[in-house]
Picture 1 (tube, rainbow, N blue to C red):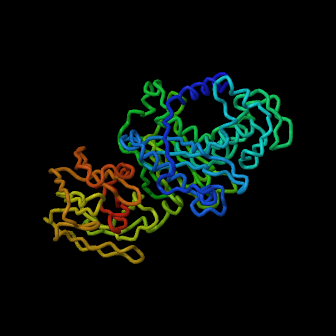
Picture 2: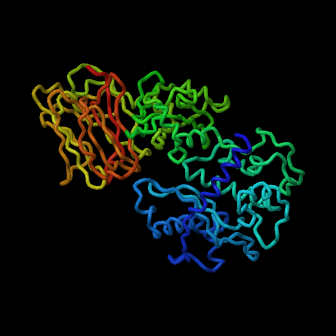
Picture 3: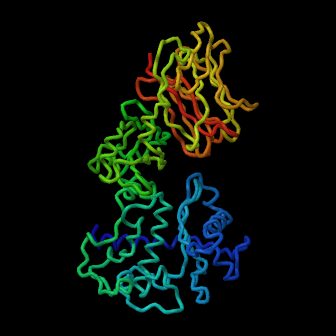
Amino acid sequence: MNKCYELDLVKELLISLRNIQKIHNSFKNGAPQDSEIQSRFISCNPNGNNTGGLFGIAMDALRDYGGPFVESNKPVQAAVIFMDAHYDQKLNMILTHAALGGGDDKIKLAIFGSHGLYSWPAAFEQVVPCFLDTTPRSSDVANDANECGSYWECLTITLGAFMHEIGHLLGCPHQKSGVMLRDYVTLNRSYLTRESYSTRTGRQGLVPILPKDECTWHRLDLLRYLYHPSFTLQSDYLDPSFQKTNRLPGKASLLPVGNRTALLKSATGIYAIEIFPGDLAEGYIEFLPKSLGGVGPQQEVYVTVDELKSKLPRDKQNGKFSLHVQTVDGNQSDFNDFEHLVQDTSNFLQSDFGLGRGQITAIKSGILGRQDRVNNQPIVFDPAKVTSVRIYHGMALDGVRINTRADAPPPPYSAPENTPPVPSRDYKHKLVLFGKQTNSYTDFHLQPGEFISHFIVRSGLWLDALQVVTNTGRMSPMCGNTGGGGEGVLEPPHGYEIIGLFGNIGDWVDSMGVLYTNKL
């Protein structure tokens, strides 16, 4: 990216600042006034007892303001500056300041203090002079991170740190390099050809500044921004492989298929598979749109343990690793300890399952909902005999009852040794239940020749809602809290069919997956 283009982007940013919402909040909701108490809210105070408190205060202020922060049906993004942030010499601390980013499914938020604004440019023409300004910092203002000995360094550190938190707002985690590590200490180099004297390093600045010396975003951050709706360009819609108009549920699901292999599926499309051997991504697979030389987001991707390990540094290839799968609709699906997931023998059940087919192998899919525990035994049904599905729901999913016909009861099921117990199903009772029965339910009747193709699920830490889809494309209503959680799909690979459900039941259905086998 050339300097002229970057300066033009800064100009556009400064112009856009005219649309800033000014929200006045005098800490009316019990937030502190006294500086000794206020310091307990500061994220950099090791002795603070509520160091994330300012984030909640900002959230409450936005909700109290109303407007788009409560009325929008899409997440609203807000980068908030606390205008009364200041340096307290007695405490040697910046008060009313925290550097935090994140949010919920309604408001995506980044917060920062105003203590460095004195060094920021007030107009486009001041960008370069401010990044060259060697004026020494006064003892009356803060030396943020002990790296703000001059005005240009204060600008670089405070603007860069705020940009880091905005990265979190936009969904970026910490990375191995770039802005989301801490490379923003060289943010100034993206706008200059020479650098002023640095009090941080005690050396004269770099001359000339080459592209390799500049502050950058990590490749995985750029991939997120490429598919983020805030960065959409009109030209994106000219490339169908971008799938910008795809409104199908996209949260990825994982389906083991044996031989250390799994199928990742997303109706919206997968654009990146991030590989985490620890806290940071150290490998990835990307699917760029065709207009940028890629194959476009993929609805189905087969991955093997060996292929994924080959993407990691050699010293990280022998340990555990997890996957974060990014989809076009902005959802992220996490699969911890991938190798265990695809090789775990408890995910491969061999039995007749009371279906009268002889010995078959059934495979557990990945689950949606709470990931840390799955302890309920599967319920099994004959997909060809399902007549209706009863979904128990209120503001969450309570249970699912599968009703079947009982015209030819198969022999009883007997679980082989070392296989998790599966209840005997002889279909004489005409139903199997997963979860709990309540007085609030919706019935969905299947027509002759129909069978359950897949389930569309809204989930977070539990299952909010569920929708049944048949092989003809008919769908039940979305039953439950239709605005809760993120949307995902439980669907077997091509050539397989659903024969059961499993997961965990708490106050509601906490998690759910499907049991599938080869289609007859």
